[in-house]
Image 1 (spheres, one colour):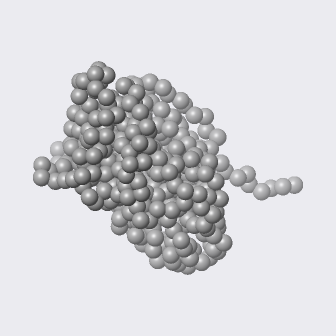
Image 2 (cartoon, one colour):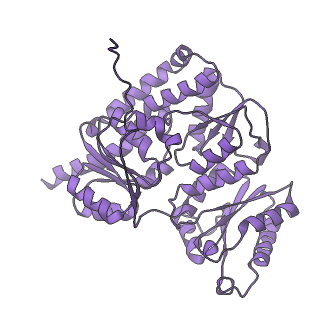
Image 3 (spheres, one colour):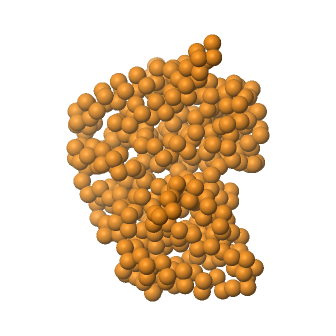
Amino acid sequence: MNTAAPISTGCTQTPLLRERGQHEVFCGLTSIIWLHRMMPDSFFLVVGSRTCAHLLQSAAGVMIFAEPRFGTAILEETDLAGMADAQQEIDREVDRLLSRRADIRRLFLVGSCPSEVIKLDLAKAAERLNARYAPKIRVLNFTGSGIETTFTQGEDSCLAAMVAAMPNSDAAQLVVAGGLPDVVQDQMLDLLSKIGVSNVRLLPNRSSDQEFGIGPNTQVAFVQPFLGETHDILVRRGAQPIRAPFPLGEQGTTAWLHAVAVRFGISADHVDAVTHSARLRAQKAIAQASEPLRGKRVFLMPDSQLEVPLARFLSRECGMELVEVGTPYLHRDLVGQDLAEIQNGPTLSEGQDVEKQLDRVRAAQPDLTVCGLGLANPLEAEGLATKWAIELVFSPIHFYEQAGDLAGLFARPLRRRSLLGVAAE
């Protein structure tokens, strides 16, 4: 008789609640705010309205005398009405920009809601401008439109456009896909070097001089779960994705490193030996920071597409009970390993019908709700503790040294509520 315990599949078989109603998310143009910092020789030119320009200015907190690496080519009424040749207008704005900014090596033409509504062909513009300025300047295009998308998809569209323009290559290499803050990126590269992984490429890469090709000997490890389009085009190009939980928390980081190591023939014992002290530090930091979270109930509303890996971290490493895990899009090839680590029980939802979801939040009365800015204040007014989802995108949260900080981001609203309750008494 076979008495072996069945292999747990976690939430991989959990029925999926699909919602297709009103959703509350930021515009995809928001991703430019972190992308332009990660690619210093690039410029992001949004072809959009004055509203697009105001959004970027507000999101970045740009000072009046600053000269950032992004801007907006304003679509005027004549453009929207078809009374002007928009392609000529784009050429003129690009010529003016490049004559003034000699440091630009990559120019991204970024579509917006207005440019998509009038069917402005930015791919055609990029092709034409590329012929004029290459190889000194590479011109690419992607969409940051907020129509039926979430804000992190701007990065996904940008990286997918970069991959599509890469040459073929048979080089054996590891590509790490997903933008990270510089300090976290350095920590990651140090860990990979210590376990014995060499020839590591970054997507996005900081400089056009670091461009590389893609092919069947390219192994890809993802550090951001919202890169569905990028994942799919890499696979079509022949790259081999590494399936792993995302490197959030001690367990997630260790599992991610083990998965990379397996692909390069590196033993698990070696990885454990190299990471021993870092794992202990991360475990201690999480234990201290997550004390207010243990036993508490959390509801994750769909916003950033970080929700599934965060749910795995909060339940497995912080002792929280998951009520519902919502995500704008569920790409199982990307988050399948995290789903497998989440104990079956919470509702798993894809998409959003915001009023119905708010009804479920009110009925469940969770201890913490992770949601967008537009929903946080109303829920706080109703007496529910909230966590801004967008802060998790802008904060360093990946790998060992940030594990305690990640737990602390969720503990802070509960600590604040506890202190306010004591003060009120």
